[in-house]
Each structure stands twice: as C-alpha cells, then as structure tokens.
Length: 86
Image 1 (cartoon, rainbow, N blue to C red):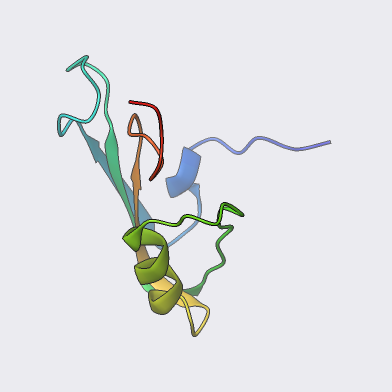
Image 2: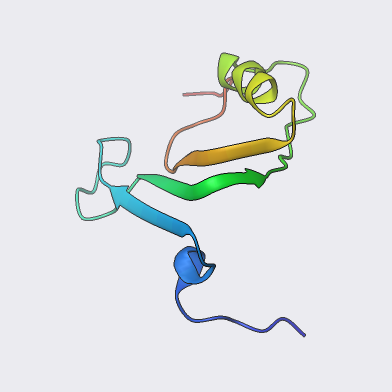
C-alpha cells in the first residue's frame, strides 16, 4: 500500500516548486506550467512515447537526461501531443 506524505513534491528535503497559469489552458484559474527544482543534482529518469512521430522536446529532453541527472524539470498541462486532430 502506498503511503501519502504531506507536502506534495516539496516534501522531500532540498526540493522547491512553483506553478503559474501561462495561457496553455483556457481557464485562467488553472495552473498549467510548473517548475520543480532540486538544490543539488539528482538522479532522474523519464518515460517517452512509443509513437514513431516525436516532437523536438522529446529529443532535447533525451539529450539533457543522457547522464541520468537533472536539477530541474518543467511540467505543462493542457497542450496536445505532437500530432493530433486539432
């Protein structure tokens, strides 16, 4: 069973986070961009799409995580994948 720890992503010592609305989502009260920052380099892993068509952010992210470490990640919400019907 998973144990929930109060404090969210900032519960772990050395991590801070912030979120803003930057215009990705139509509703201005919803945050759609966040930054999670580690005070020190931290081990990092990622899961990527299996789609044959991959956007430039996938290529850039793979390059940045090639050594398995990162200090910050940016998360967005409300935008579509590289190829879609819209």
